[in-house]
Length: 219
Image 1 (spheres, rainbow, N blue to C red):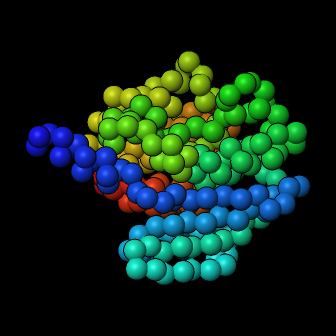
Image 2 (cartoon, helix red, strand yellow):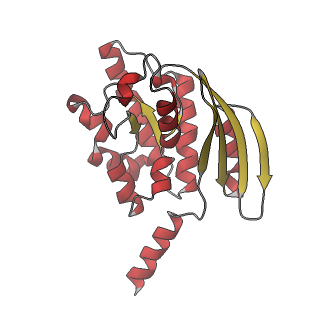
Image 3 (cartoon, rainbow, N blue to C red):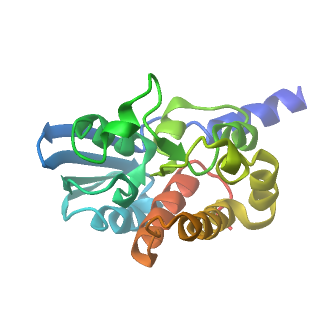
């Protein structure tokens, strides 16, 4: 009985009653217009606003007894895939909208895969939270990278044991920090653009909001 109760508690903290981020496409084109609505606990409202300001200005903040709702309107310019910041769901929306644009066709060339990479792998998320909630995966910190799913770098992108070790010693922050250090070394090796400081800081904020929303270990 005790084990069942403990498991129920773990699942409840990993399964909030509302979606962390919802995106709605308002207008397509070279400037993609998207509304983002973040619903978080009141104590996470300030962090959600910091995340929002990385992409756009804030349209509204509604505080309720048990939640805060932050609404923004994003104008996503047509840039290279590696310059798009946001959770997995956002990257997939942008990829679909820009699928026929220069530099984006390759990401949509295979069925069921558009290049959006979960920085914390699905298998690791499942293990640290006991299951893979759909909304949790959709809002997980992600990036585009042309070598994603390359067998040569599978350990960097999908190193299950290494990520678990980092999570239990340094939290999600440690996983994300280690990923960008390793992937930028690969970028240098292949002459690819580096993820710059501003990009990494923005992804770190996305990762922190996701971590705290799902009651995971940040650091």
